[in-house]
Length: 400
Image (cartoon, rainbow, N blue to C red; front, side):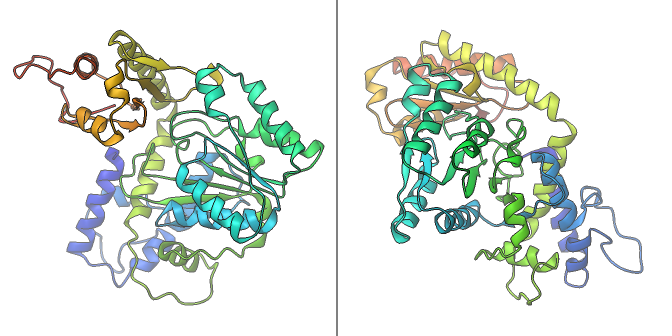
């Protein structure tokens, strides 16, 4: 959770406890105007920049490079937005296409929706070729285009970045499709991309870009966001069964009907704070992240772990490493994760001995890199770090 998001969270709690929110909360959340009427507000510095719902939408547009005509939606959970995107995809397209890099949870939703609507889903296998066969971006784009054409596909659901760190050149995939059959609907999962990599010109070619603020942006509290392409923005008919979506739609006038459910609106405030912090310091953060990725890669290699390096065009701030001994490869994901947790290191483990390290956006201290190196060696060798080791981390929890 970034410092800005933390401060916004604390000030919101202070405002709620000291002043109460019932009288002016809706006006403040909607317009970002005043906290109360008729007297000077107490100091809540982290809330003074809150711009209202439409101002938050503008911040998201700047973040992803969208135009002012493209609508932005919010929800309590990204899954609600994913279900909406999938519903639009299967209603619009008879033969949607996806890849084996899509988040498994979203893929299950897509498979189920295609079965219900009697749609034919085509899945292009890419992971093996990218991670282990050094496939090029040109080759991968060609493989997707040829499959799309051969099977008569008419829509896509792609990840901008997979959960194990593979970046797809979405714009380069979608643009050429118009030469023979333009897709009727294009959905992109940007949950692992937003706040992590530059979005480039992706919003020019997609109909629905979904993401969240609590991953790489560091808002702490989950906030699902979606940016609609021009075609979908013109419809203005989105109906998503999510309380935060309903509340924000009512506040911005998109819905005329009243809404009476109690909703946790704090993620809107912490989400804006995290987005603003990223926009104000984006170049420095991304530069630190790239340097950290290089150092994590070197630390893992010198500790005896294999680094799974795809072609440079696919690389991200995620480093995928593989255990050097067969016993670790045979362990469950939970057991391998526990080994790292016992040493105070938070990682994501996958079946077969694969471990994901995510490069932070601030510089990693050399003491932490040394600690991570010794931890990786000790896990590979099946031993514990010395109880009185002088390699203890400078952080309470080393987040890699």
